[in-house]
Structure formats: structure tokens, C-alpha cells
Image (cartoon, rainbow, N blue to C red; front, side, top):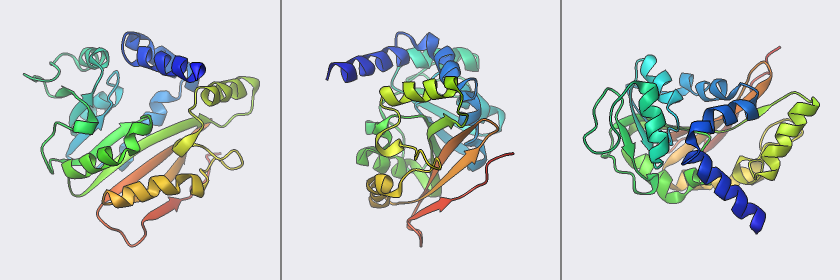
Length: 244
């Protein structure tokens, strides 16, 4: 379908040749909450060693470093690698890594990382590749015992103004309100049958999964925590109250 091809091409440009516009675009589509959505994952991160998959322009790498974690970044885009290097104050991507935040240019489908070396693997706002069975197995492999895989799959504005509805429409027509990361319109919670296939993939890869929605003053963000190992409850939904 031509429209889907155009959307994919637009996203490819955003993550590559137009990576310099990424911060402005993310700010606009979240009305300034994008960084808050990302940093909502910080309380879920275990250390000391953290790998961020799809680090983008490096905001979370910087936040993780400032929080005292030993962090490594992985991204396939050389353009995002350069953005992150600038934000972190230098260093080199891929071979001959220097600096206190190593950046690896690589594909998570062939994760170029040793086994059992991280306590947390983190990914914020990934596309559907993040639940590919090979990706989940790769992440499980690089995690230490009792490690966790933190995913921030979506954030959304909770207002009902014309501007909020317009932004949600933009998400919908670009395919970001469909598939495994869909948000239920009635109460903002994903419909469990929609998520069932995704849950089964995590279980098959050796994880048990928790999902929690964090409410911010004018938006909400979903946090997935995949715990390495078999749990008594393979999937748990944690309810939390909206902020007043």
C-alpha cells in the first residue's frame, strides 16, 4: 500500500538523514512530554550494568549515566550514533570505543554483546521489531540471572482538546495506535486479547511480564517489565491511579 510505504520511508528518514529533527518532532507530537515518558522507565531499571537498545539521540543514555549506571548504547543508525556522541560529550561508535558510554552500531537481531553481562536492557518507543522472537531470545541471553527487559512501548496525551485529538489522529494514521501497542480508548489500558500473542512470545523467550501505566499530569505512559525467568504469574497488569 502506497500510504504505508510513504510512512515507512518517513520514519526511515527521521531515524537516519533527518535524525537532527528527531527531538523537535518528538516534542511536538507529545506537547513536550516525550522526555518525561522516557524517564518514567528510570525507577524500573536495575543496575549496575544497563544496555539501551535503539538509543536514538542519547537522552536516556545521558539520564542513565547521571543516575549512576554503567550504560552501553546500541543503535543501527549511524546518524543517531553521531547525535548521541555529541550529547554525551564525545566517544566513538562501534570498534575502538572510547569514553564512559560505549556506543555500538549494530542490529539487535544479531546482538553483538557477550552473554549475561547486563542487569537491565532498556528500549523506549521501539517499533514492532522489539517483540520479534529472535530479539527476545537475544535480550534474554545478554541479561544476567534475574535481569529485566524494560520497554516503553507508548505514551499518550490524556486531554480531550482539539489539539490532543489531532495529535492522536496523527498517531493513528501513521500506524502507532494499532497492533500490539494499541491503547484501549475507554480506559487507556490495552485490550488483553490484543496483547496475548505478545505475552506468549515473552513466555517462550524465558520471561514473565508485568505491565503498568504511569499517569503524569497531562499524559500517561505504559511500562513493560519482562523479568528473566519463569514466574508464578506469566502476565500481571498493575493498576495505578491517575494524578490529580
